[in-house]
Every structure is written in C-alpha cells, then in structure tokens.
Amino acid sequence: MQLSDNSNNSFNFQQALEEEIKGFDPKNPPKQELIDSCVHCGFCLSTCPSYRVIGKEMDSPRGRIYLMDAINKGKATLDEATTQHFDSCLGCLACVSTCPSGVQYDSLISATRPQVERNQPRNFADKIIRSIIFNIFPYPERLQIFLPLLWVYQKLGIQKIVRATGLLKRLFPRLAAMESILPEITLKSFNKTYPDVIPAKGKKRYRVGVVLGCVQRLFFSPVNEATVRVLTANGCEVVIPKTQGCCAALPAHQGQEKQAQALAKQMIDSFADTGVDYIIINAAGCGHTLKEYGHILADDTEYKEKGEQFSNQVKDIQEFLAEVELTTPLSAVTDDDLTLVYQDACHLLHGQKISLQPRQLLKQIPGITLKEPIDAALCCGSAGVYNMLQPEVAEELGKQKVNNLMNTGAKLIASANPGCSLQIKKHLNQQGKDIKLMHPIELLDYSIRGEKFKL
Image (cartoon, rainbow, N blue to C red):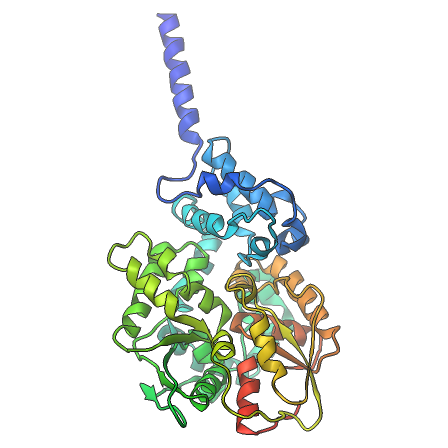
C-alpha cells in the first residue's frame, strides 16, 4: 500500500510539473524551422538597440531566439521572466537587415507577441497603460475627443508646471512618457476634412488612394495636406474614403491580434470599389503594416486574398514618387543653401527596404546638401508605442539619435514617420536644440509651390 501511495505521489508530482511548464499554445507558435535557421553568430548584437542599452544576451535577437527554442521544447516557461525579454524588443527589424543567414526574426517575433498576449497575464499597471493606448490611439474619433482638453492643458500653462515639477514622472513614469511626446495642439488639429475625390492638376496619370493615419491626421495634418498637393501636382487624382480608420500598426506590433484584424478589414473595405491604381501612405510604421495585411489576415478565409491584393497596391509616398518620377519643376525652399539630414525610420529602412528613394527626391530640390549621420540604422526609441511602454530604454535611444543627427551640422531634420518625429522633437527640446524638423514631402511641397520658409 505504501508503495502504491508513493507511485501515486510521484505521478501527481510529475503531472503538476508538466502543467507548470507553460509554453506556447497551438495557434501559430514561432516555427521551429525558422528558429533553427539561426546559427548564433552574433552579428545581430551590434545593431540591436535594446541589447546596446540593456547589455544582456536575452535582450538581443539571438537571446530571444534561444528563449523561443527553449519554450518550444518545454525547457523554459512562457512567464513573466521570459516575457520581459520579448517585451524589450523594439521590433525595429535592424537584425533582419544585418543577419548573414537570413533569419526571419520579424516572423518569429510577430508570432511570439500574440502568444504573450494570450498566455501571460499582465500586472495591473501594464493593463491600465495598455488599455489606454489600445482603446484610444487607434481610433481617431476617440482621440479627437481629448484634443480640447489637451489644448487647454497647454494654453493655460499646466503642461509647463507638470513638467517642471517632475511629479508625474516620479509617480507614473509611463504616463509621463506619454505626456512627454505630446505635440503642440493647434486649432487646425480639431477638424480637418477632405473631399472624397481631389482632381489631378493637368493630365491625369494615376488614380490613387491616400491613407490619412491616426496620429498623422490629428497632429501632423500639414503632412497629409502636403501629400495631397504633391500627388495632384504630379498628375494623380486622389481618393480619400471617409470610412477609413487605423491601419492596425499599433495593435499588430504588440500582438493584439483580434483588434489588428478588425482594423485591417475596415481599411480594406473602405478602399474596396474605389478603382485606385495605388494606395499611398506617408507614415513609415503604417506603411509596413499595410503591406503585411496578407500575413495579419492569413487565417481569415474571407479576407486573406483581399488582404494580399490590398497590400500589393500599397506604396510609400516616397517610393511611389521615385518610381513614377516627378513631372513638376522644383525650386529652392530657402534663401540660402540648406544643409539637412535625413532620418531613417526603421519600418521604412528595415521593414520596407526604402532608403535611396527619399534621398533621391530630396537631392532634386535645388540648394539642398544632404548629410548622413553615424548609426543611421539605429532606432530612435519610438517604435510605435515602445517609448510609452519601455520609457527608460527609449530615453537612452532618443538621446543617442538626436546627438547623431545634430553632429552632422545640419540645419534641418527630415523625418518620414510621426512616431519618430515626436520622439526626436522631445529630445531636441530636452537638449535645448532649436532645429526645424519636417517630413520630406513637406519639403517637396514647398519646392513645387515655389514657396520658401525660414529656419
């Protein structure tokens, strides 16, 4: 009898141990063949921004692949300890560009993030900040409700007091990180509408749709206006569906699978039957996600093919203009020669492999000298909502990025992504640097219209 009890106890202990080792669930875990393609050479370490700042192997692409492998094989648990290393990844994809073995780390991390969201409970603080982000930011109509309050917050000087005391940063560092990138709210932010169709100037060459974005349409509306003017000036009839919403970048990058799929479907439906030749986007992070709809909707029998067709039509504005070529004459944008530095957004450079096109367009503007920063491929720390979720790492990366940009001696920074622009402006202000930052399309717009601006 005693022997039987011991056997039962042993069985129960083994069963409990197996239940305790919690791994990936069966729904699209990171593929073992992709994990096995990593030869652990370490080339990714020098280009990984999180590894540079944190300095731990597990916070590098190679280390995370080790973890994925261990969890797949039941040697490690998907728990708070392992999750923190997946969370520390910015998703900048620099490692994908660097890897000599062609490891698809982008596919691995995009498969791991939904696993984390489904299987690893978040603590209370995480739940609150993520709830704010994912219930407000991807919905422009909700975000717009807060604009009057934010306008008052800035105009009455409350923002200056909050920042001067540093109290918010001490008590709620993530909320402080969110507040620190808040751009200036102007009356133009409140209500900007576009016609459904805007005719081309001169002979029509293409019919294109334009994605307005979420943060872009509310806080960077001049970029959208410049985009429409540049397109129409170069023979494009522009279509802007009123039903379009978020591109799904924010939830997709953080493993919020269902929300990302719902937003992607809405975007696809909004451009259905518009008869456009291309769908144009002027924000790097949005563009990368729009080109991934086939992957995001891979398990949806109704929308998978629609997603692939939609993504095949998507072009970054700079990519598109470089391909079809400008048909309008360009003039100088300042009275004197202008030295500028172009800042590579990660999801444009690494995600979409777009690097030469923006530089080619900028060099066509008379009087412009283009400078290149050191570590041009290093992430600025924005990475969607990373600077709000991981503020300490993002802070260090933001400082490095601004230092590298300023060391070029440029008088203007050209940035093609709203998240990067907010992050860079924040650190320019913190360092007391007075330098203009513009989207490359804004510069083209000035040049096409023959107008000049002062630095």
